[in-house]
Length: 159
Image 1 (tube, rainbow, N blue to C red):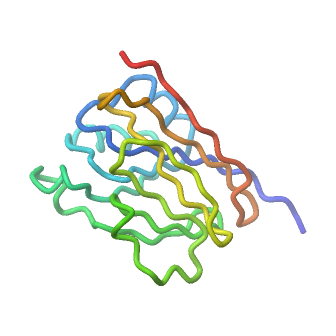
Image 2 (tube, rainbow, N blue to C red):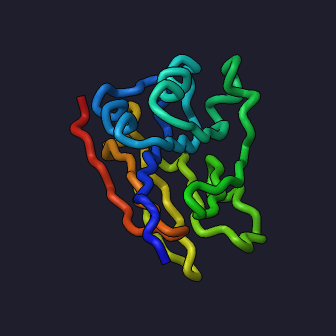
Image 3 (cartoon, rainbow, N blue to C red):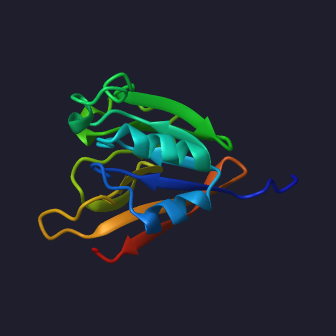
């Protein structure tokens, strides 16, 4: 079987109206960008669209924002043969995950990476304003031949 080119995917959540320059610089390195909600400022989503193909869901703080409240609360999509389900709050993930290889969510502002029943559950944490003494994080996935080949946690200093 011929090896396909590796695909890099930036995964972020909870920017809350602060798209940090170092986060944008990391997103620019990836042809695909996932945002698991609480964007808050539509212009941040517009900027991310300039860097790559974007998949974004509405977070609880996006319900009050023109241009963001219309985003889907949950998305199912495929990148490089890897099937994803993304929602803002893990509690909204449906029980039937047949065929889903990766579940992406946010909301808690805490990075979490788990493999459950052969499926990745990834919360990239918050890469907007640091809250409750939390870290500022995002993730980068490496996909190849329909599989997740790597997960990189990226931490940023709180400005």
